[in-house]
Length: 322
Image (cartoon, rainbow, N blue to C red; front, side):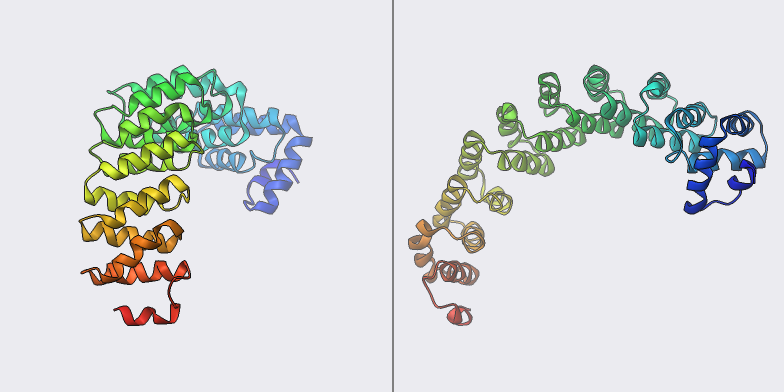
């Protein structure tokens, strides 16, 4: 059996068999490689994609030859398949070709996106400046800028953290949202000041990711900052913040939520009482008992459930508060 025969039977079993054959017959492989990428025929197109099918199984040198040819191919689909393979196998020798694709403004978005993630995963320090510049360039495609922001999470360097914090002030909400998400993934205490400032962003998604970022840090300053923001923001925002913050069962957060049991707004009292049932907080027992006479039916119900979790009322009585 020759390589052409193997390439005509595409399934995972034959991929491995084909890869083994390629590894053992380098001269025949290169002949097929030249034919697949240099000639124009339906058969050659089939060979081209069959080689890309097996690229994960062949030895590195041969894989780089296949992917290198794919990155220079005129067909967009082939270039993207090549980029995905370069990403999976971390092909450092193909960095010049990847940079060429990224810097080509006429290149397809999908291809440039994969180029970004190859650079960010292979050597995030060496290509940090390139990725930061792309993230900051206002005339670039917004989604591509977001992809560059995501790639910066591979390296929590001071320069990357500074760039992400600066992007929280970008005029485009999508970029601010992406930056807040990136900072939440990194979770560096150095970003606390800029994340606290982002709690005043006009966009809900940006505020939510800033809250998550601060909430998930093991840092008292971050939690106290959230507690202060919770106490001072409008009622609707307090309701939203409680939902997000209750996942962090810290003394600072629970105390801040318990204080809202005394709010003049029924929706806030309702949400705070619900939170106390999700994460019982014994110091809140007195305030919860006072809510058993609240004018709002749901406030009364959640207060009683919270007290039941604390062992202050008989759980079997829960049905009689409605």
